[in-house]
Image 1 (cartoon, one colour):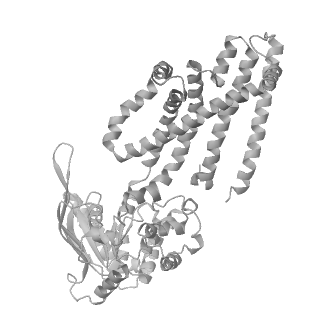
Image 2 (image 1 turned 120 degrees about the horizontal axis):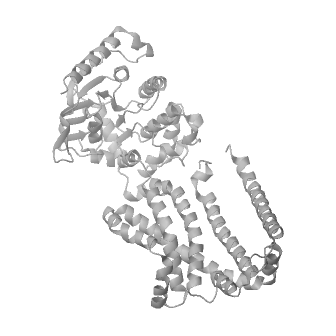
Length: 281
Length: 260
C-alpha cells in the first residue's frame, strides 16, 4: 500500500503541468489564525495567507518576529489548525500527509534524543512510522554520508558541535524521504560562520536529494542565497507583503553573495522590511 | 567511553574513601571517650558496640530481616503507587489539580499521628506497616517522575506529532526514557525515606524489627546494644541505597554516557 502511494506521488511529480498553481505540491488558500488574548480581545497571528509551492521548489518566509511566519509553517505541517482557510499537500489535508509521513520538520533546536546515537536518532521517526526496513537502514547510511556525518554515526549528540547536531536533525527529516521539508529557523541558534557553512551544506544536500522546502528565517541573506522564491511578511496582522523570485542561477556558488544581483535582492528586501517597520504605530 | 577507565576504578576508590572515613570516626569516637572520660552508660566504646554486634548477631539478623521485608514490600508498593499516580496526573490536568492538595496532605500530616489510627483500622499485622512505609516513599517517586515526564521539550513533541506518532509511541520512544534519570533520583530518595518509615512504624507498634529492638534496648538503658542496632540499621539503609544505585548504573542512559 505504502509503495503504491509512493509510486502515485512519483507519477504526479513527473506529470506536473506547466503553471505553478496546477503543479503546486503545497497549496495554501486564505489561511488565517486568530488567537484569543487574556483580556478577551483577539489577535490575528496570520491573515489572508495564500501560497503555492511547486514540487522541488525552495521557498523562504522572512520577516520580523510576530509576522506569523512560524505560525504559517506549523499550519502547513498540520501541527496547528487554522482559524480560516485551507491547506492542501499533494491534494490532501496536512493530517493525511503527516499520517503518510510525507512531512519532514526541522526546528531551531536539533531536539536529538541524548541516549540515542546519531544514527539511531536519524532512524527514530522511521521506527515510529513502522518503516524500519533494510532499505531504510541503507538510506539512513546514505543520508548520513550526504550530510557529512558518516564518521559520527555511532557518536552521541553531546559529543557533537551545534552545527553537526543541526545536520543530524536535517538527516533525520531526510531519512523519512518526505515530499515536503519544513524548516523553522533551523540555523537561527548557530553563530554567523556556522550558519553560512550550513547554508552551503543545505544547498549541497538539496542538490543531491531534492525536496520541496519551506524555510522560515529572519536572515535575509540566508533566504536569498538558498531560495527560488522569498516571501516577505509583516506583523499585526501577520500577512504577506511581497513575494520575489530570486534571479540567481543554480547551482549557486558561495561567491554568488558578492554579485550585484544578490546584493540588489537583499537590499530590496531589507528596505521593504524596514519601511514596513516604520509603519508600526 | 572516555570515562571507561575511571568508572572501573571509581567504586574501589569510593570504598577506600568510605572505609577511611569510618576508621577516622571510630578513632575520633574512642578518643572522645578517653579524653573526656565519658561513662559507658552514656556512650559505649566502639569495642563494646562491636562485641554487642558479634554476640547478638542472630538477634540482629532476625530483626533486620523483619525490617528489610517491610522496607522492600513497602517501598515496592510506594514506588508503584508513585509511578502510577505520576502517569495519571501527567495524562489528566484535571486529576493533577484535584489530587495535588490531598497528596500534599499525606506529606504534611505527621505520620506518627496517623499510625495508631491505621493500626486500629487494619490491626497490628503487615498491612498498616506497608501503608505507612508506602506513604513515606511514594511522594519522592511521584514528584520526580512527574517532573521527568514533563521534561520532554515542546519541539520534540511537535516532531513526533509531525509523523503522527501515537500517545503510546511518544511515551515509549521519548517521554519514558527522558523521565528515567528523574525516576532514579526519586527512587533513591524513596529508599532512604522508606527506612525511616519502617523504623517509625516499628516504634509505634511492633514486636519485631530493628525499630522495636532500638526501643527495647533504650528502655533497658543498654546503650551498646542500642548503638549496635543503629549500626545494623545504617548498613541496611546503605544496602537499599546501593541496590538502587546498581539499578541506576544498569539502566540509566545518563550514567551509561557519563552525563550526570
